Length: 92
Image (cartoon, rainbow, N blue to C red; front, side, top):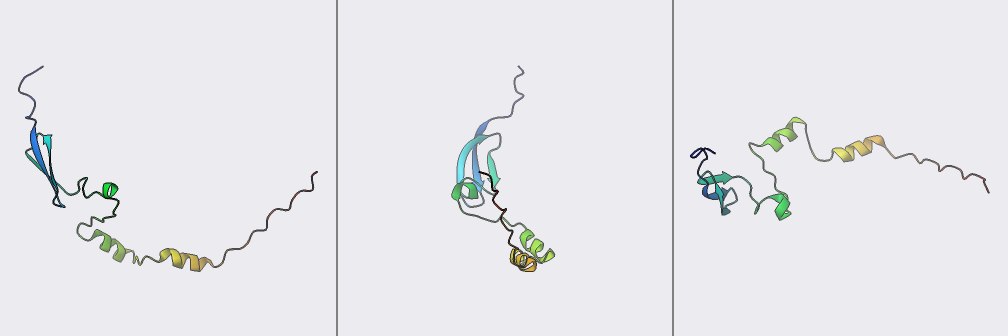
């Protein structure tokens, strides 16, 4: 194996957008992340929307999203028709 070809593996301080910091090891001295284990929805059980540059709002404006599309679709269809059950056979 060749010597001196691998970068230095050192202690690293990770900074999260929520304010949490922790130590790990990496080839970099510091790492900045947006979401960590302390604020990630999978680990906290809380839903959090990470909306960069208003993407959700732009989507809602573009497609006129009001949130009640399912209710309007159900109202347009009208009441469901009842389907008669098949007649029992006379086998003994």
